Image (cartoon, rainbow, N blue to C red; front, side, top):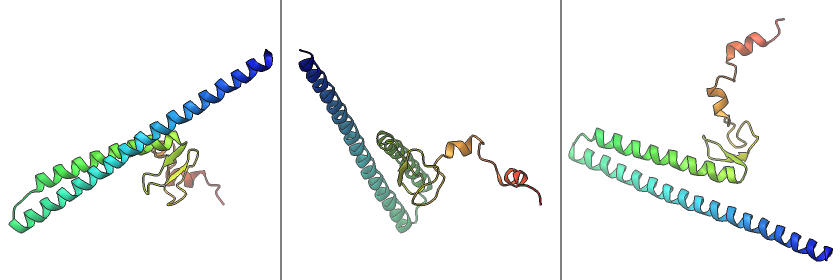
Length: 141
């Protein structure tokens, strides 16, 4: 009976692992659909913005407030898209570069494509020394 119990236990473990992977795959697929939907909406907003600018120039009207509203809504959608892309990358143990959008290993400090610093929160917290501090740390000749 011991061998049979081991086989059943191993089968249950394998089924649980497969179920977990399938669940993760479904979650990532939903996130990707959400990202595609946001990208589509951003495109529509850009198209509407272009139409507003075109019409205003053609008619000689001032639509600065309408343009500012469109830009604000596009920026909001970009922030949502960034959050979704961060969730996708986190599920794959990746970090997305804010500058170029490239996925990098989670422990990377700089982007492998553009060289942009990935850990911006460290710089914002003041942990990165500025040029004067760096110069004062160098040995004097």
